[in-house]
Image 1: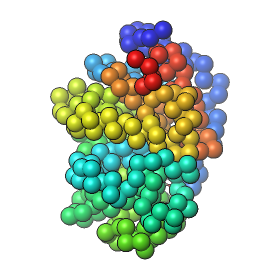
Image 2 (image 1 turned 180 degrees about the vertical axis):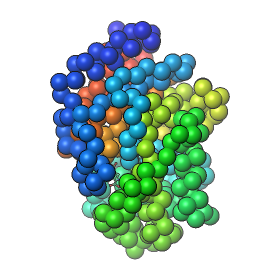
Image 3 (image 1 turned 45 degrees about the horizontal axis):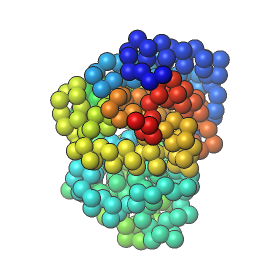
Image 4 (image 1 turned 180 degrees about the horizontal axis):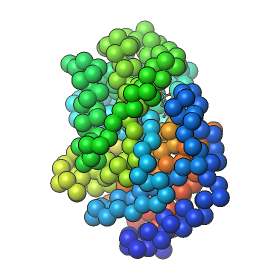
Length: 314
Ligand code: GLN
């Protein structure tokens, strides 16, 4: 069955919620900072925002969580807006085949990260968009952009998360210093990571996230606000990078099972895009071995199966 009918869709997401209920809590919650370690692993929420603006939700769709690496979609969009295709001189657009925080490829590849969605690549993007601003200004710009996309001013940076990220961020510090040693970062490491840690610490609900991603499902334009965020071609290309790189070393598996562009975060959220149809956000804090939400991936696989939504079929 292929369906875009809201009544059918609400029944589908309710059924997914009911089917997965006995498994809530599966996977391993990120525990590198206390603020993530103490999140109740049994949370589960999903929100679907249709191209015509209808919103379907289930479970904890309105509970805010740490979006973490999902923020990388929004900072890439800002960077492309500021620098266009020149972004790709600083960062590649190939899947890494490595963990999100891996350092191994950087040495072989002269400090140029494989893609903007692994940590090294996102740190490079933070460096790029920081040009001409103080870190504080840039954090403000990112937050304003996300609020504008979601059409919701009630979106904030969780300062405790940002502080903890900085206090425990040895791996990200290593990545940044390593890239700076290759001359690949223009700003001091603490400035760049100040931006990076704060973007990761933005807290949003599934409903807010799905609204924020709607431009990617609608050819670059948010049909609810009427604002054109990016060109049609750019939206297509961001979706392409999400499909190929959005789930780190699990990107191939996600494309195989779900068949939609998606970006995960270590907080257990996933933003997925069904082009022309809907923007979807799901949250379940337990992660699989690749650092992607275990039940979140499964819920999206079920949704894609039941709706027929896929970028691989007409
Ligand atoms: N803040 C996390 C980190 O930098 C983000 C990683 C993620 O969400 N995969 O390690």
